[in-house]
Length: 158
Image (cartoon, rainbow, N blue to C red):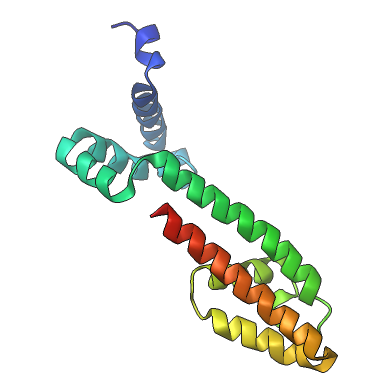
């Protein structure tokens, strides 16, 4: 087959990188480094070698592009809405969930994953209440629309 033809196929490139990375991981100076991930990725090679398991995973997850595009869409949406929510709520003294970008990101991630999203919304509404009913309604609409948008994106991808 030759090395040049071997490198042209993407699965064989992946296996070659795995072999090189795993070999480098064997040296003591590379034990606790990024080369550890190559040891973990050897499981992907195992999944690829069993055709029945590969077909099963393809039925569950579908093509990889669909899943990867959903993950990329979700990450972009979280980055954008975290920035917006931080700008909207960072000036409120009692609301610690949106003081910094990592906290805002985690709060929006909780809403996207349905993990206590009403707690985030209610705590923001409690702190915004002093600014008037108009801002209270806008806050509720912001969180509800974001929740509906993320859930409809997940449902359509399935």
